[in-house]
Image (cartoon, rainbow, N blue to C red; front, side):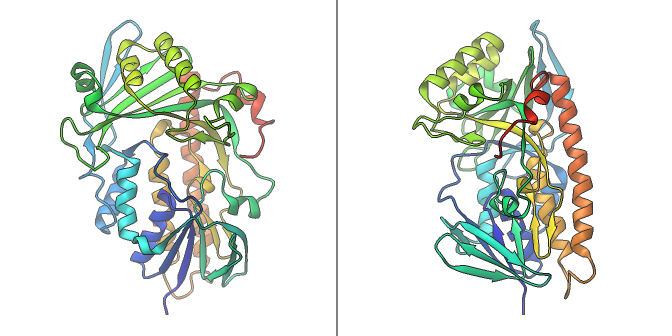
Length: 387
């Protein structure tokens, strides 16, 4: 009989785990409390290891549905442009790549609007309770429920993500809305501008239908700004309906007053190239940047992966590839008749912890060089409430 895994969370980490476990012969079921995950996510840097594995196992083809990366263009405050080689394979979009992985998993294996409320188990099985009063059992529970992970709160109630002192404004705009001379500079390049304690980058990604044809792609951009913890951050994370969010406001829910204010700041701090891109974007969204690494990843037959396990600041483009790597390595660790007896999960935990810590330190170092979070990080990280 095949082993059964329940995966909590239908984002990259969760769906990648479901796909990878299926490749190893596992029966999988994915639970997602949100009925619609299409209003979050932006661009994705395609890392070689991630692309190789996904394509080799027929899970997704990110190199096909992506815009090739050729160079990095760094706009200087004095108007000069520096040209450097780009190290990424290509750029794709969150919705496009997630859609490909979801097709591999199969829509019938994903239960949306299904919320987990409790978990218990031992070294052989795990049982979860659901908000609708039902329960489920499996051989493995994979917690991929993101930054506000319910599973992590149940297992590690005293641990919490800590605010890093700055936010990432984001946007995705059809390239036909941007003047040709501006969007041509983004073709095959990662464009960036570094100001005073602020940084923005932009690159082309496939259209919503996966098209990479000229005129049908989208420009993805990310803009980092320091924001003090407290009233300023609370106001920023309050949507147009007056609802306070813990970490981000999805597209379409940003108050008009907040959008006007950030566009004004863009005109003050950015050069004309990036101001044009921001102004052309119809729907802005924002997420606060947090740091976190779980003290444990394995709890009997329950494991934490993706953002539930570790948060990597976005500066090195490794968030998605790290989530996929968690899933790949997990599927290999649980291959065999008795994956618990030989300590394979503990070995997986040690390996992924080392990987996570290295990525965290690398991304923090970049943030410090950019002047992000400096002067507010230490003051607020000890005071921040649970996400």
